[in-house]
Length: 196
Image 1 (cartoon, rainbow, N blue to C red):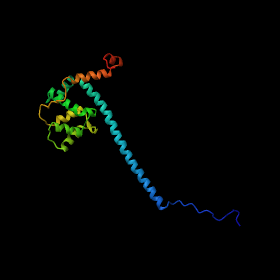
Image 2: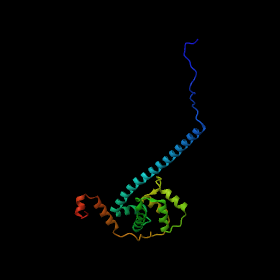
Image 3: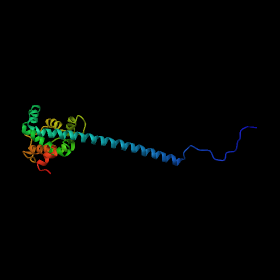
Image 4: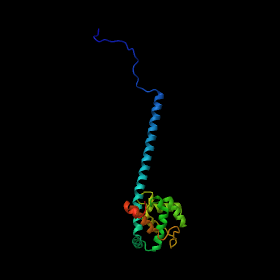
């Protein structure tokens, strides 16, 4: 009767539903992918923070080298801004900052600030210290530079005069400035100084 050729089905039809075991595997893979995405996002945020800290520490190190070269002028400007401090107080604050923050690219982290305030025997609670730190860390870097450190120390009430840093030499600035200038000099000048 019909004009079309027809035969009975010889193969079973395709089933597009997944069995129960395959559904569990797919759910586990999706969960692993979600966990991987969360870890990757946290890693990227951490790397971005480290990159920002490294870039900022290079800038702060260069600023601090500039302070060394013209320290007397810097002290005069700082005395205008902080009249309650003497030149010796500002120098002592600088030496303390340099000692504690030099290793970290001239950025002072909160845990190091705690050590410093313990050195000054400042009787403040960790919550008060955190609040003081956050008040000067306006960019939320998690670390403060020398200017922010001076603002923080201006808010901290401690005995005057500022205790001297026993670990610094009087002529340290001249030595470090000379070393910096020689390191920036061309190779011929360095050979003239006998560095090769």
